Length: 380
Image (cartoon, rainbow, N blue to C red; front, top):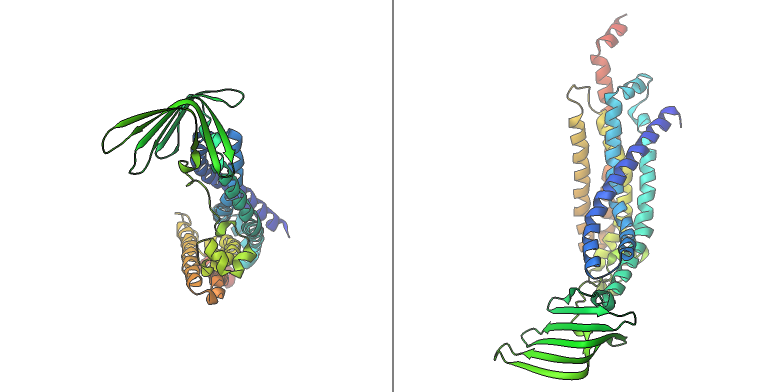
């Protein structure tokens, strides 16, 4: 690797790191705000929020790396052309294929990173995130033991406790529960304890009363009790529990496309097969995207208005590749026997690379022919 290769590769990595950081922060903040609102609203600590946020990072990084790689290649190529650095390299006799060699190395680095993320880190982090989210959803104490605030563990339930002692005793509680199409029950008690059993969490109330309002007759019935056990599992909302999906499954399991696994995940074997191959094709596209962006810039001539046409062409190629990937994966999902078609997308991108190299070489020869100095030299 000569000096130009090292210089271009270093510039690509620096710009790639910057754009990756920006994109990851944008994606992460967007998700972290919703996650923070849900966790803090349920009474969980900041450490729990940081833990779950860290588990979402591999999935966010996987989305940001290919985009950052393409943008970095276009940005660095545009800057080198604007500053005439590539013109100097071309004057030494370097072909477009030779100048694209460090970009290929750069794309290979991104491909390896995406492969590791897609096949190992993202499924493991998604599975751990689902498990932690399910555990937190079942932790009814964190959602109820908030002194001095009205909390809503589900849509039709309101709970309030004035104070909680160090021994876990709740003082002066209020619990309102409206059954669907049934009466509205309001429980009040001076003391209460939260007990977790195998059949679900129980709220043991002492020295309290039950007020039942019949919606039809509008009659209010008041009953007093010394002790009463209320089943919280009937009124808590379990919609926040994350079920296992294909994002939590390893790649070998997806490629086997077991019908039983597909039934458990509420999907089809074709969907599992398509997602399994997509984890590999996405890494191959991440390899090709920087090459397409960089070579597209070399196809244009010098213009005072910049290389906006070449940049638009490179962006259009990436959009076309993504659309083709969507169509191909839908075909594989419907017809699993056609799974080799999943690799049509990276194959199409790979075929565009020599086309752009030929186009860039042709444009270079045309520039030489149209250069007056070159013509004068030939005449002399």
